[in-house]
Image 1 (cartoon, rainbow, N blue to C red):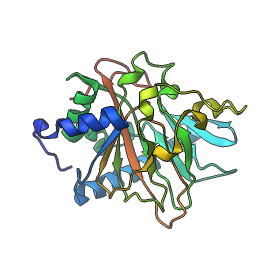
Image 2: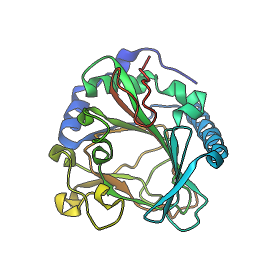
Image 3: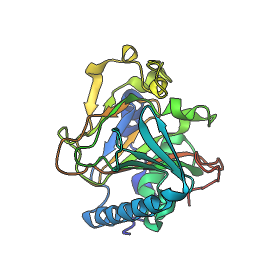
Length: 265
């Protein structure tokens, strides 16, 4: 992996701090070179192969007709239709592949996260590979904080960064964020009687006119708050829209899935 070794270069700027406070997100373009992205793409493929091979020893279950498999301290989530074989999400992903494990410590991610969390010593909370294959489904409006608040006492300090492995645009289901929605904290869910409905944000509590499409090339980093309402449309294109999402937390706290502490180096 190509590494940039001056962490000071990647500290938060005053403009980014203002954007974070006002909008709940900011974008850094061109953070990773094409060679690095190709390496991450290969690593993501190897990780999915490893996870798929391990699923036979895991636990399969269904929530609202969506198939999940828990194996090796990870959850595999499949596409949202009956008998789907296409893997959509793998969480966490870093422990399946050494390149992704090393990426956790990259200063291009860690240095701005130190500014967002407000301390130097950080730990990993979770990692995720969002595959969004060609023809893949969208994901409804939601916050991350309601998923995590029962497992964590510092849910306000769990910022995300999405590393784009493919270009994201409005025709392949790019990430969308409701600007400013993070200011309201944890919002009510839909409570529509389904198993997962409570985790999807009730649209009466945010303004759809404030949605912003995260249109970026591969190699970008999108930093966004755990309270930011976000989602994505389906991907009707012929190409995948892959992305990694890493979430950090204050140091010496355990990770979401396996309870182990993975401090950042």
